[in-house]
Length: 176
Image (tube, rainbow, N blue to C red; front, side, top):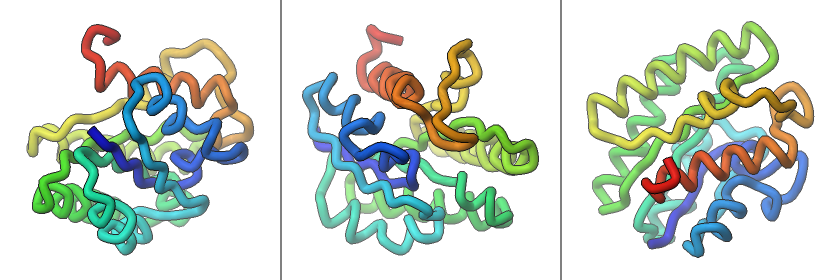
C-alpha cells in the first residue's frame, strides 16, 4: 500500500509543518507510506489541475481527496466543487488507484460553514452513488468536546490527532 493525500492547508498541516499533520501521524501509526500533497490555500480546481502530477505519477494504491474549505471562502458554486471531486475520483479509478473522499472539517465562520455543509452533502451523495469510501473528518470534530482549532479554520495538534484517528479507523476496521 502507498497512499497519497491531496488537499489544502488542512492536509498540509498548517500552521505547523507536514510532520504534525494528520497525514504524517496516520502513516506513522499504520506503518504505511503516506505522501502529503497538501498545498496551503489550494482549491479543488487547483487540486484537479495538479492531480496527474501529484497523484497519478506517484502510482499510489489509494488517494485521499480532501478539499473545499478554500472553495467555500471564495464562494465557489457547489457544482464546480463536486465536478472537481468527481473528475479526480474518475482519474484515480481510470488509473487503478482507489479513491477515498475526506469530508472537510467544520469551519467556525457561519457563512463558510453553511457552504461547506452543502459541499459535504454533495460529496457524501456522490460517494454513496459510486461506492466510494468517505472519511468523515467533519463528524469527528462535531463529536469532540475538546477545543480542536488553532484559529477559526485550522486544527491544533489535538485536532490533527483526531483527524489521524478517524483516518486510521478507515484503514483498520477493528478500530472503528
